Length: 297
Ligand code: NAP
Image 1 (spheres, rainbow, N blue to C red):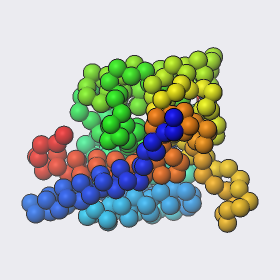
Image 2: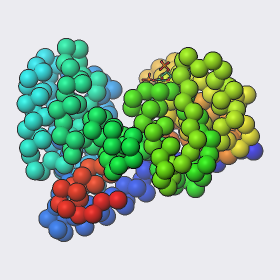
Image 3: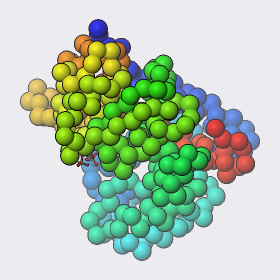
Image 4: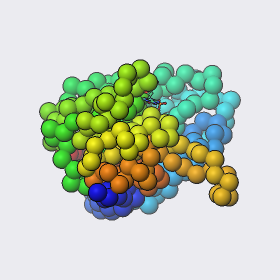
């Protein structure tokens, strides 16, 4: 079997068309969704993520309030900016790009964001709501994974899902979302990590394997069964002298070999990555609708 490639770029583009239409309709009612963006310091990866998020906002008509702060910014200055955004009616979502430079207290900043504007879904209030199955902002990468599965026609309900990785931004929220008694969930979920005794034992019995370990070749062809669905969240740089920049990006899955056994697989790049920003836009639009008293999904 050769897998069908799940084209994350295409799914993300389709969703952005839908969002753009929604934003246009909101504008007819005088509502402009707004995202407040805060980047502290000069980290090149963070800069490029933030620029991509701002461009994506512009593309679909979301207003973005872009703030670039020097690495020497104090905790008080950062907290004051978050407070200002909490009160600003033009801003429906607040994004503080992580990681923050050393010396700044990330947890305190994330806690200061008003949960109704927490479009990253990292505030404990939203995490708690997600766990108990209440309506909440869902964290963007795991929500993007579920959208990819849903929009590819993969049956999640009743499936054995094995997630490799238990971070607070991917593995744990994804596991929580997939076990909900809801459509596009109702899965039986196993979460693996570095203390898992026999990773292959688990991945071999999975209908859906989701790799979020941050290590190339964590999932290889001998570790999966025929016809499995494989979602690769990992983004890793590996040296490549043939590339101008000296490296290429790979996921956590041995893509070439695994695609010969799987039924569906996401590539890296072009799989989960484009969905993360799209779900941020989605949350911002939902937040604007909620603030205006319009029914949200
Ligand atoms: P993280 O915080 O480093 O967590 C990695 C998790 O994987 C940990 O739970 C770790 O176990 C587990 N793990 C690592 N090596 C393993 C192995 N050999 N066997 C089993 N488990 C293993 O990483 P993260 O923030 O979740 O990100 C994971 C990957 O996804 C990274 O490559 C990151 O760049 C990528 N990512 C992509 C997007 C996107 O938009 N495409 C978004 C977020 C993250 P322990 O807990 O035991 O250490």
